[in-house]
Image (cartoon, rainbow, N blue to C red; front, side, top):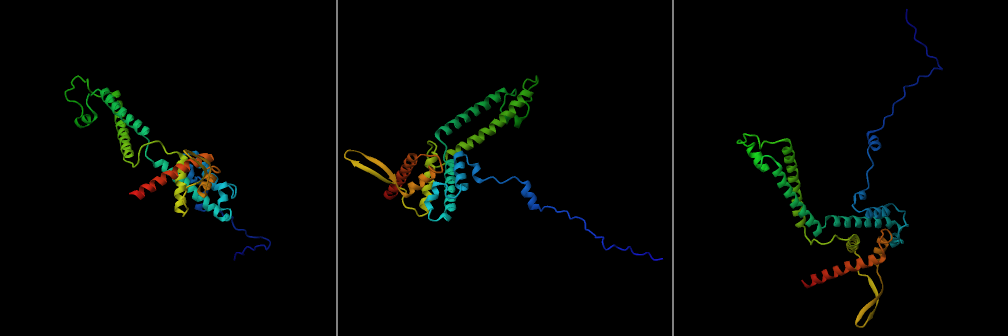
Length: 274
């Protein structure tokens, strides 16, 4: 007898199983991986990081530097990013500049102390020989009484001696590399001075005129001139940036700019003479 097919009621509906939605690999990576840190957080100077953060995230028109291109507000983000690169360039210059005399003298003193420490640790060893002789010749054959055999303390001092020797070699290499760097070992470059120099370099590459400020002064016979103030496009840019975004005073910016300009002027005169 044929089995009758099961009749499906019209009112009965077949529902499919719910489909499990899985996130794509890229979405999972985005949710699980840590956020990417801004590039300026690794700068060694905290004030550099604060200034760059203002340049990148302050609302358009809020900073004094924005007034430089107020006729074309679309140029404000480009100007700000160019000034951010000025901060990066100045920070890199300070980081790579030759160490001061004081730093090198202290490093050489530390190297001498490490050499003395190695000698004292060799004397603390019961063997009485230096580390190279111990490694090449092994234990002494004539030590019948066991007075020169290695004990636990001697082994510990020998291991420490090797660590100090490696550190001494690394320190000596660092000193030699630093001494060979071009330039003189003087005082560390001040932050404002390097920022002015980096800004002047960007200004010159962009086709800007001289960075020399216009000095308003009254000349006097047989006496220094009386300076009433300084002005100029580059000075206005430097003041808007380093006083409006950074924490420097206008008098400090004017003094640093004057020093940088005098150095450039002397370099140009030497180039003409040679």
